[in-house]
Amino acid sequence: MITLFSNNEYISLYLYYLSIFYWILGITIYLLKVFNKDFNHFTSYGKLSNQNKSTSSSSSSKTTTATRNDNNDKPFSIVNFLSLFYLDRCFIVTEFTLNKTILIIYLLFIIQGSRRFLETYFIQKHVYSRMNNLLFLSGLSYYLFLVLSLYFEYSVKSSTTTSSLIPITVGIILFTFASFKQYQCHVILSSLRKDNNDNKHSIPYGEWFNLVSSPHYFSELLIYFSYLLITQFQYKSLILCFLFTSINLIHRSMDIHQWYMGQFKYYPKNRKSIIPFIL
Image (cartoon, helix red, strand yellow):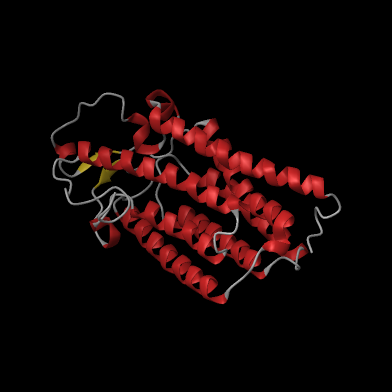
């Protein structure tokens, strides 16, 4: 049984509801971001941070390249990775009585976090720019609650959850496939730039980029959906986390798609924003 919070069921219940409130609050804030242009501009980053500034550009920028202003994600990535890795490791090492499904999810969290950490440092190229403090704190809290909310919920309802080999197997296969496709996307994006001083952005081609503008975000959605498959949709915190992530990535991918369309005269018209053939 759960040892960390089992001595006080009220604490467990309180932390569970706190985590649910966090995800609902996050969803509400991102819906505000979708429908409020001023708030959306305030929380924008990367190439979208300057999209409301001067729209004048040379004719060449409308064809093959455009000025790019990305955030340097490396400090942000290392903080998130260390917090995610430390929390996952603590729960895996100290709580061997956890349900096997939860242990698998935590292991996948570590694999995903480790891969993204390595890609950020050794594959992706970033031009330095300042990140909004609100974005940094929201990102940090996101990864903390990603780990903690699942643990809090399991501590409350461990006796009512079940595990099944088939959804676990399908989920792991989907996780592996989506992770590989996301890695391919980041390699393609990195190949478009010479080094970290190159602030030009070109149209990416190949793999899922032939179908959508943000296939790395689509891969991310598949990764989070694999968590739902593995847990058989039994955890409200994971479902809310998936909704939170979906709203964020879908909205950002649509903004990126519009940015591409505005910057490149010959941008492929058949590409969707994030979901192939649909959106």
